[in-house]
Length: 393
Image (cartoon, rainbow, N blue to C red; front, side, top):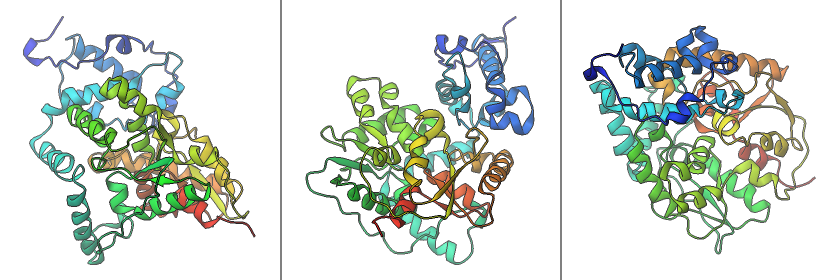
């Protein structure tokens, strides 16, 4: 029996993707929110069942439905475990887009400021970063946010090489808060013999957070700007796992041949380095690799991280099948309780893998790095760790 049509919500889901789930449950142990709560509705299988019920008009899109969707971190570990190749990430993104107008007034206001007023406007973001840096020095920013030490001075510009044969994508938050990672990435790429260019105007934001929040049209518009900022056909190297996943999905997001060709140029930083010659000094310091979800589960490009670090460090891997750390873009802001519970499990897995009191965590995603730093871990980007080992004895 269907509900009143006025209660229905068109989720605009791909019917083939929606029916692909056979309910086998192999995804359950890989879902961080299910592992924390043990609740079916907190699993990919449960969420898909809820999507079907709402799409068919058998259930109302009520607060319980919205809560279950919002509680998903979108780590997409379920996709890597699924034998039926269910595209859960697509289903969740489309559901978020459909429910965006139903969000509370305050959340829509916060998202409007962040997603339209700040992230796509790099000057606004960098100016706001300097204000945040002052607040940080006045101890007005809680350390639980895990922010890096921000500078009150305008960031020193990065310098591109002439006639580049590769580009480095810089993006928004990472460029404003962790530009030193970009500097390390540039130095390492150049040490492999690459001539590295930087994006032209328009590449201020890739739209990854917009996609997660269901702001589809804005994400498409940002994708168009980004594609126009990288002329030619040289590889586009990305040192942020979340941004890399977004750029590599432009073909589906935008739906054009040009977008698909652009996505084919995208390569993760460690993958790029692993395919070239790089002289590094050996060392014995312990490094535990944390696989960001969008590097491991979405791009399936996590293995080169450990490979490129192995010559300079004693590399350790966690035994949790790439369990999410709980950061999830803005997830830790809107779902702090679940986020911290998921992080506790990740921190325990990292410490177990280290087997020593002295270790560094390698993370190729800024959100993961900040989230884990807030838990008291020493986190570095693989580019920074490689830069420390450049050259030979």
